[in-house]
Length: 486
Image (cartoon, rainbow, N blue to C red; front, side, top):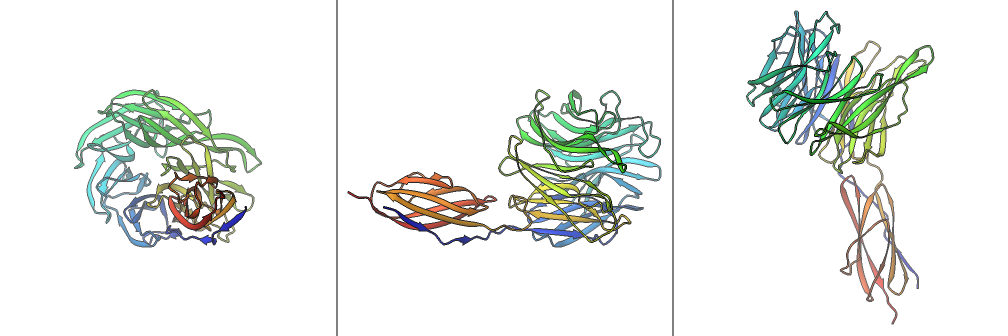
């Protein structure tokens, strides 16, 4: 006996938000830096305008990518700003920024806290050294941390001999608890601190890079900022800027880039080719557990924007893949790369903005990625609009598979009664996974896109099938008459 029953093909619709927007911040034609944070039903981008007396801007977008408000501040007499991309939300719904200001003979670190309207709660300026800057700010259990460096023997521009690590702790009111200035790695220079984490035992873990030998480092300090130990890694070439996430138990994942030299004709005879990596590090032992390198289609050296842990405990990183065009010059795209918890590559998506231009466009310089409330990704950066170098802010919102629009979602079960109560079930689908079958007879649910089930009694059974796309479940139900011969 053979009986076949199939459901009507269902084209499903999910309530995901997608957008691809470019913003011209009204106060300036030259917006630089761009970080993004998710707060409730809003996205907030943060950056700075280039030019003299540089203000910061804070832009609020709704879930559809529409601009709600943009506020700016220039409450210091600045001429230039460093690290406009070091922006983080705090647990009370406000924001933290740690950066540097340059102007009128000063170069000082700045730590600031402000609300969603850009009303400043407090600001601290580090002026104990002639030259200093913070690279980032973060919240810990009893206050805030800002971390950066103090250039030594500064001669203007980026001309200085080496850097000392600068780390400062503030209470929740913005008052200084302590400062620490630490020589790192035998007086290497130009530190870039990416993130600081507080461990369960109160110790602090600092991630960063330095340029002397182009290496990355992880530095462990006690709760008072005193040195404990360090670990560094990298090849002889340009390897820097690790973007880490805390996965618990003293373990961290870090996305970083490794550069190689590659001959690319007369234009770039020794071009650094950059490949992204994902490294797992144990801060308890200060040892690497594993490192995975990912092949990408790029010629010029790339740039990693950030790393985040996804809802399925995997990871997603964003980075640039530049290449050289003989007519247009350097071109860049933005790439998302998704891995599982062990660093195995699951998928990658590349995004282009392709205006009809006849000059080099440094588009898609990616700065940040965050996990949206629906499990998708919101990505931001800048691109050059014209040959004069005018930059605009771009923001993309994708689903959890990196798509900028919803793909076809089809759940199409086929039931085949083979003989004497035995039922074969298959699903024909587009883009769904994690299938669960309820056979309607009280037995345990079965999983998979093809299953076989044996009924013990004749009867009509309601068989339900569910599948997932981006953490959203879709269901369909069929009735099937089962006959068992005596």
